[in-house]
Image (cartoon, rainbow, N blue to C red):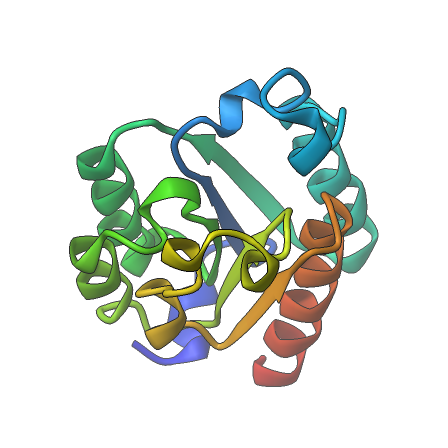
Length: 158
């Protein structure tokens, strides 16, 4: 699927933002690691960053690996880019990696905390094998950085 084909029929390019397990608990779960911002704050940041750049956000969260895989598969025809924080699936889900490998647009991996400074088992990311770029350790600001860069890439490809 070419970039022109993916954006055909849509007024603005779509970035699918996928949040993995337990991210619905942001603001209350381990604030010393993840801060006090909530998932609503993340969504607001993504939308506020995207709007002036002419990009639409499709924002989702699931604790279910199969649901996330289904969203990625649907993105092949319904989105122009994916921004994913796979959370606990980062270092465990080859199935999410396999789904991401079928997507032809930009894929940005985002993590609120710096995985490289956390437990050893968190250092491995299967998602990184499919990602165009990875942003981690900037708190929720990383989502804004990712949306801005994705918008640039989509504009260049149009």
